[in-house]
Image 1: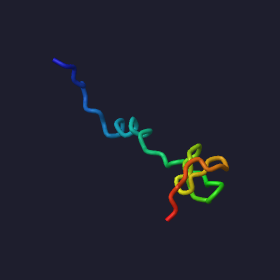
Image 2 (image 1 turned 90 degrees about the vertical axis):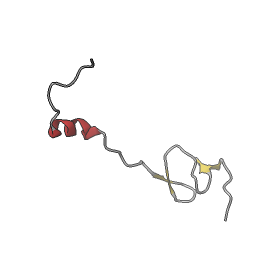
Image 3 (image 1 turned 45 degrees about the vertical axis):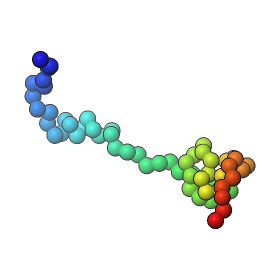
Image 4 (image 1 turned 180 degrees about the vertical axis):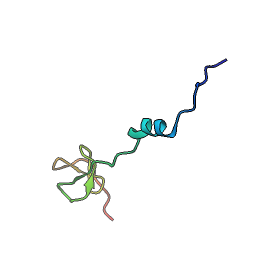
Length: 61
């Protein structure tokens, strides 16, 4: 037989344990080429530039 908890975990104790489980907002930086917001250390998805040079070619509409 598997072990079971001796007492019910109260709502306060449960919520304090889950206090660090919240999602954090994404840290966005502004692209130096086009000015769009993008994730840091990644190629800009709108223009394809990274650190001042074109890394991928993005199809223009």
